[in-house]
Length: 139
Image 1 (cartoon, rainbow, N blue to C red):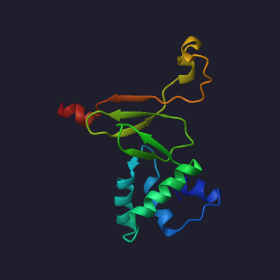
Image 2: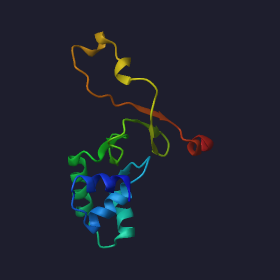
Image 3: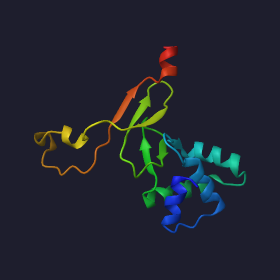
Image 4: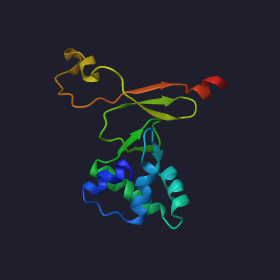
């Protein structure tokens, strides 16, 4: 059973065939699919699944805090199932591939007190950008 499905079962989330497929499509490391990509992969497993069901399920998973919405290009929302593992993102400027990364050190500590302007900072979102090996080879 996938890590995401296991967490959802532990929360008592009702697992229908459609919900199971969406959770299975999202399972894994470095998964950052758009809703349309989730739908396309879900259809391959369960041809009768509707786009509305996929969107509704994604919305529920985000509301539950089991999946996070990530925007790396300023347009398409991507869905990240690694909501319980602190990480940042590495994005290819060429093809848009997204990878989870775990930089050393505390990113909160990198912001000096004078630069916090009295804010109580609770979270940091950092995105690293560059070219993946395939795109760099074509450049």
